[in-house]
Length: 180
Image (cartoon, rainbow, N blue to C red; front, side):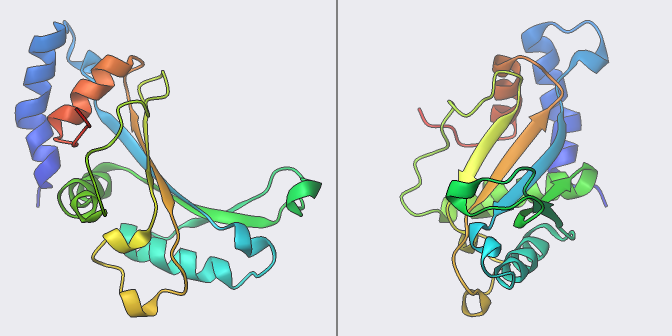
């Protein structure tokens, strides 16, 4: 089964980007490389059971087992020690990446309270786009009665281009709702 967004990219987006930016080679056309979803759990430093809820939520949202992230350095003012659990992350590629992006655009973003579009200031200068979500409840897979607390997450869309304008054109072609 072909993923709807991947088929849209192959049939429509590639041709429009090639015409707009006059690419000579097919490999110059920007594409989505991966999506990294990060959920920071600062409370896990004092209570290790907090990370279990974050792992369960991220597993349900992405359909893939998260990796536990640990602190690289000790920071005394945050009461953080080296190798202490600070969160979890998932890297999505290929079909799972397109399925997640489709659910994010069509289902999750419209469910955000007072949503007026995502900011176009979140490009990092290297063609990657970062998006912050304040609560995991915008995803319909999450059962409201089973969560222990509301957690936010960072979603980073990594593209193959190094120019922000080309990456923005790619994401607009995927119909990500940018603010006007």
